Image (cartoon, rainbow, N blue to C red; front, side, top):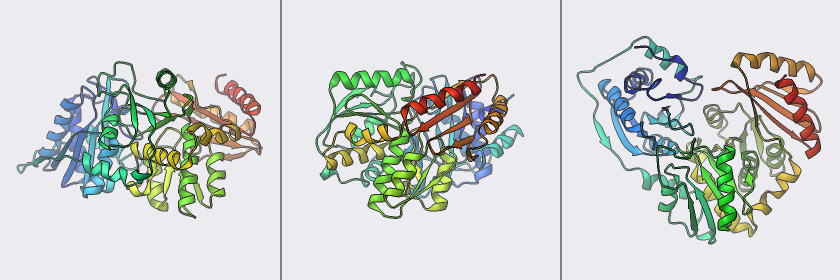
Amino acid sequence: MIIDPTIFRAYDIRGIFPEQIDPDVAYKIAQAYSKFVNPSTVVLGTDVRTSGPILKEAVKQGLLDHGVDVIDVGVITTDMLYFAVANYGFDGGIIVSASHNPREFNGLKLVKKNAVPISGDSGIYSIRDIVLSGYALNQKDKGQVSEREITKDYIRKCLSFIDKSKLKRFKVLVNGMFGPAVQNVEKMELPIDLVYLNEVPDGTFPKGAPDPLLDENRKETIEAIKREVVDFGVAWDADADRFFLFDETGRWIPGYYLTAFFGEFYCQRKPGAKIIYDPRLTWATIEEVKDSGGFSLVNKAGHSFIKERMRKEDADFGGEMSGHYYFKDFFYCDNGLIPFLLILQIVSESGKKVSELFDPYFSKYPISGEINSNLSSLELSDPILKKIAEDYSDAKIDMTDGISIEYSDWRANIRPSNTQPLIRLNVEAKTEELMKQKTEELLAIIRK
């Protein structure tokens, strides 16, 4: 049996079903995970994908044959996996999921005790090597399976971040992208009126990749917000670990602004709070956190890297422009429902519209938005980064993640994708005009 090693990626394991990931491969990964982590009891769940049940059963059998007990938590969101492992004190966890990828994909996200992620830096490639070595173990004493309902406890944990009594009655559009996020919102019994979009779980993802960052998916949400006349709109990706916000006009609020916004919120509640952010776009977070008496710490993008830094610094909050938001009081993990709840309470208490809360960010911190350029291979990113370093050698240069170049009135980050042959550009400046000028200038180098 030939196993494609490219399915083992920087943050998780992901490939096309069944060509790259089938039950046999899933079984072998579970066995390798068991050898690498050496757990006694592992939480196991799946997202809504149609290939999820058969792959989950294969993972389950791989764990059981290795002598590992399995807690089957059924269909869940990724942040529910983190909760189950950390809250109940189990040794590890696996969710069968390909996050926001199209329907033909599936994969595995792996964590250790305390929901510490297993990434390319902390074990995925070791697990890959165990799989490729042909490792197999069939214990005489098999593991045992039990089922556990975790939704009530998970929802109680999320609700602990707010005071429900302070919420005003809003009309909110919720786009579940055919994952289970909206069902969890309904179970919270919030005093709000919901307007639904793509709320019924459907693992065939009939409208394409379940990713709210895609233009075509944002357009649908924007049109629905305008049509239904709501106070604001929200969306999640299919495994619901990322959160997206739209104001009452349908304007999308970039994750960059939300990171700064929540950073400011936490620093106002706790002077001296530590906030983690990624290097793609930075000025808003740095300035708003500083002005609120907190400390901002830059870190390489990616959920496993951010979580590691969150734990190391005992940080209160972390955010990425991709829509991941991390909370000290949620085991230093990312969560898709807590940002929604915080927005509800902040808007309720402020007496302002969502647009009024974020207008200052749009005017003060103009950004290009992330612009992707295709490459024939990822290796071609190296000469591009070298060229930019040479052309902008008089800038303040940082290599935390790709290359960041910074001047007094503009800055940019250029980084290769961890998973695709793409190079990603983000530009911010003091003025809209300068931002557009520098974006075109850098794209000319990248796409030459």
